[in-house]
Structure formats: C-alpha cells, structure tokens
Length: 232
Length: 357
Figure 1 (cartoon, rainbow over the protein chains, first blue to last red):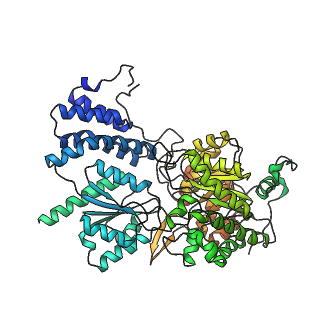
Figure 2 (figure 1 turned 180 degrees about the horizontal axis):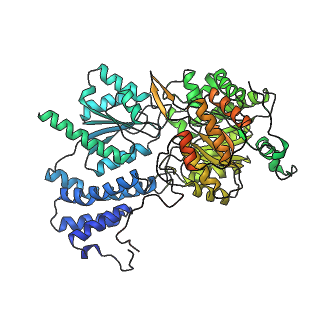
Figure 3 (figure 1 turned 90 degrees about the vertical axis):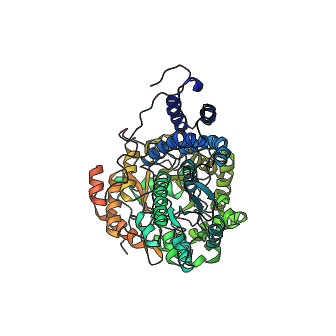
C-alpha cells in the first residue's frame, strides 16, 4: 500500500490517474482533484468523461462506503468539497459541450427544521452524480416548494427532516400537491434520521432514502423509469 | 402508582465526601445512594399529543402554554422518574434563530427550568431538574462554519438561563460531534454547573460524525470538567442503544452511564407519529440496560408515561441479571441496525491502493 514516493499526477497514465483521483476524492484532497481534472482535459478527454469516469465514479465509492458505515459525515463532506473543486472547472465546459443531463432536483428541509446536514449531503452527492440541484435551504413552507416546482420544473422533489416534530410536515406538502393535481408531475423523495420506508409510503412519497448514497441510486432508478414511461 | 423507594443501602458505594462543593447537587447525591435512577421519556411525542403542531418550536410553550409543560413534567414524575429534562432542547440561539426567537434564549430557558423546579419541589421526594441542551444544528469548521468559541457562547447563554431558573444539572443531549460535546462541557464549566452529556449513535452504531462508543468514553475521561454521568440517547431503537451501552461499559469506565433509548421505531398513523415499542418492550429494555451497566435509565422519542411506569416497575421488581450478550439483546428487543458498531474492528473496511504520504 503505502510507499513514500511522491505521486506526480501528470506522470500517471490515464487509467492510473483516474484510479488515483478516486483515492484523492476519497481522502477529500481538493487541490489534487482540480489538478487531475485539468490534466485529463489537457489530454483531450471530454468534460463529460472526466465528470462521469473520474468524479462521479469516485463519489460512488464514497457514497457506498458512507452507506456501509465505513465513512461518516466529516469524510463525506470533505470528499464532496473536493468534488466541488473539480466541478467548478468542469461546469462551464459541460454547458458549452451540451453534455447529457441526468435530471433536476429541487431540495429543502421542511418547515421548522433547520437541520440541513443530511440535505446538504444529498445535494452534494446528487451533483456528484451529475444531477442539477436547486437547493431551497432550510425551513421551507409548502408555498416555497410549490413556487420552486413551478419555476424550476424539476424531475424530483426532495424533502428532508431530522426531527420527529417536523417530519409530519412532509405529508402536508404531498397532500397539497395532490389537491392541486400536481403530485404525479414529480418524483418525491424523502429522507432524514427519524424516517423509515413505511413512513415514506404512508405519507405518499415515491421513496424513502436512508442516506445520500441511496438517494442517488433511487433518483437514477426513478428518473429512468419516468423517462421510459414518457417515451412509451 | 407503584410505591417509589430507593434501592436498599447495600448499594451504597464509597462513603461520599459531602463537604466537597460538587457533591451538593441533587443528582450527585442520588448517584451516591442509589444503584440506578430512572430518567424521563419523550418530550416532543408528548407535546404533539397535547396539540403541538409540526414545525412549531416546543420551547415557546414554556411561555404560551405553561400548564401543558407542567403537565409534561408532572407526568414523568408521577410515572416514577427520578430525573426529568426541561423543555429547552432547541432553546439555543442557533436553533431559535429559525423562528426569529434568538433574542428569547434567556426567557425561554429560565422559564423551562422554573416550571420544572416548581413541579419537582411539589413532588414530595427528590426529583432532579435537568436542563436540556440539544445540538446547535451547525457543523464545525473546517467542514462547516461553527467555531469552538461561537459554540461555547451559544451553549453558555442557554446554560446560565437554565441555572437561573433553578435547574439542578445541565443535560447535554443528542450530540454527534466531539467538538460540540467539548464546547458544551466548557459552557457548563463557565456557568459553574454540574452536567451530564449524551450522544446519539444513529449511524451504523456510531454518531453521525463517526464517533464510536469507545471514542466517547475516551472523550469524557479526558475533559477538564467531566460530566456526572454520560451516555447515549435517541438513535435508532432500543437494541442499538443497549449495544452502545455495552460499548461504554466494556471500557471499564467509572463514570455512571446513561441509557435513554427510543420506544421502538416511528410509524405514521392518521396524521401523527407513533412509536411501535410497547410498555412491555421498554420494561425489558430498562432491565437489560441496568444489567449492561447503565445507572441512569430512561427513554427518548415515543416513550410515554405508560412506558415509564412499566420500566420503573420492572427495575424495582426484577433482580439484577448478568451482563447481557448481543444475542440476548436481539432476542428480547429485536435486531440491530448494522452488523457492527465499530467497537470490534469487525466492521467493513476498504482496501486502498496507495495513500499519499
């Protein structure tokens, strides 16, 4: 494993470099990720390939290990921060080259809940997986969600609550969507420490996501399903 | 109601030196003479049943609906709790800011403790009023923006108000970061108050920030002002909480251990949250918690007065048993949320290529 030789990113071949970038993401090394992204672009990689093969693939490992209890919140925040460094470089190039989009999500914690650690993790991991994320922040009343759905036209609505005192509010939002006949226009994902699958079902969400990694996987499955349905 | 009595004198430990200043608080005295103490149950779940609506900060009820808060406290005392927590969990400036009530920290916390004092003093026995202090909801730098100094200031403001209202002890709970635990400890020192501290082990048997039960033991024993007792609250379910308690006591720690677990798992029924743990299950949990080495035993979310009564009765009637194994715990209370809690080095790991030096 460890050798004391210094790792020079530019001296690694593509395959080695990508693997090293996965490791560097895992260790939350932002400068090294930025350098790796630049090298791959210079070598003629498309921005989309850099995003998916180096960054998204690396964040998938981080997400899996978070799900499995190997990594915890501080490590994931550092990894996501490193990823963000890479994204700052890639984002304008991705827009320019018209790279394919995974989908769009509007996300926020519900009214009364200021606990945004989990919500931020989901937002970062979703961005890491190539989704466009509109973050409404904390303490969102139903009107705020409706307004954002109207203007952003996302595929997914994500709601988060950490408290038993705030989790019932998710149902208020879903019920309002139903009343307005908008419920089926969106994939509704919910999450937060006190929630569980049964709760998600009971309030009428499409899925409960146990953690940020599960949220990404669930979002991919539901977006693909929706896409197929719309094309049928 | 079952007759309440202190466990017999054979549980007396070392003769306490009552001349010491720190021994003058009610909790220290009770810990000296009793083998176990029963804490209270849920605050949020009980207040919901009284009509608190989702998203509303419960602390405002200290001023707006004091009779409900008295009823909350009294229900715990009447169910046999030796300790109850004040309705001030989210009463720090960082949390109250959300409701534009950050200017009311003093008033809300002082009243939370005053109402508690009133109920405890009217009970006719010694009941400890524990000033609840929950997390700030912020992340420490470098990942977040919270500094040690800011966190100490936030907790200190709340601690002084709880002290002024007559709390016997500060009760720091549901913490997940070591930095936040340390900041709360320092706030207690600045306020000149004895304190207790519990963390929430809800992520694969660790705290959200990755702390193992052993890491908390290491943390509390190194603090310049250690808590009177420490432990775990909330988290996933009763089984996980007891695994955490075993993780503490395996370290051979001398400080009393607190177990405050949820009454099962939350379920949604007709517009409100219901926890699926029965009073019988919580009675089993309480006895196993004591057998695992916990000395302060209570509930958290979903734990209602009927649960507390069943716990108290079981603790009084049933003799102390051997330290339970993980197998016993899962047989009696149900399985764990993860295969390992990080204590046994048996958890999953990742093979690494090569690390940068």
